[in-house]
Picture (spheres, rainbow, N blue to C red):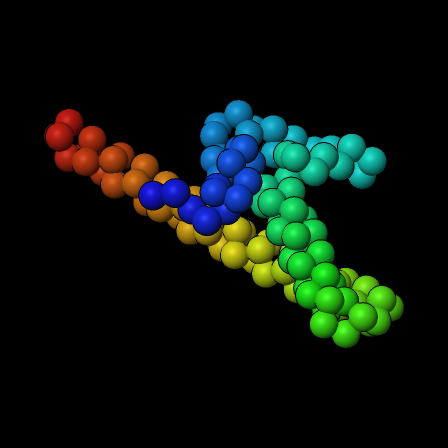
Length: 117
């Protein structure tokens, strides 16, 4: 099944696929100035969603009221709400996938122990 986000942003993000290399890279300790947006799970996707959401809200408000500063305020609020929502949803889905992955590994390990006995 294709997610809604994959239709809008078809390129791949770390939130969409967590492979072993990415997990190893994420576990390394980085200095505070070595912050990398692309390697932080879900961050880039949530920032892009926030930008699109904020621009949309600001443009709609400006088109309806013709007051730039108020539209700017609404755009910033739209950006923040959309970014936080997208971040929360993505992190929840990532955690859910990790739990399912761990459960599958545990089930596989238990079935291997049963067959070996």
